[in-house]
Image 1 (tube, one colour):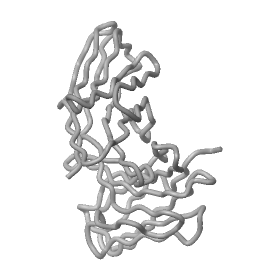
Image 2: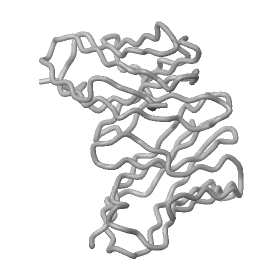
Image 3: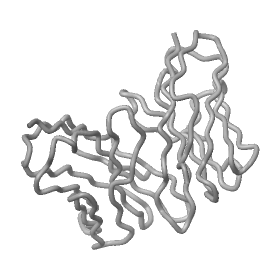
Image 4: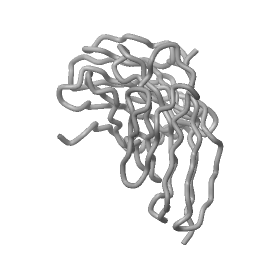
Length: 113
Length: 113
């Protein structure tokens, strides 16, 4: 079935370090791919998305490129801040399912000053 | 728009009691989703509706769980009777194709003692 696998956490980085959180997917069709972020005590917010192969989603210094050949959508940021500390979820949705999301297990990021 | 609105934000109840969680989707969105988040199982889709009609309830864990959407602006998730293992954060989300992403509420943290 359709699924998302992402790198396990927690990930602890120092401020200004580079971040990569790996995400791979399995899907029968052509999914749209997403990264959602959850700050402590909050709901999930869309961070970025890509709807077709080779698209790059970007927001707040984060980037991810839809790689169909490797079925991946890795999240990257060149210089993290303490305020980036949160849980990050990779997810996919399939056409004709109206935004129904299949999530990875989440990766907790902690950024130290 | 105020976004997806869930109530209550927190609910503490005793085992065996009935619990009702409420959700108001974003106006104009025709898909509504209920998710459950736990440490053990991550984010799970419980049920989703399209135009107030349940499309897929295969994620509903047991007959103790039921969900309704009597109109386009309101949905409920009911647990009767509640059990301690139902303790989790329950999220409601809505979407509107051709947008591919879903928008989440702040969640209801349920504790069953």
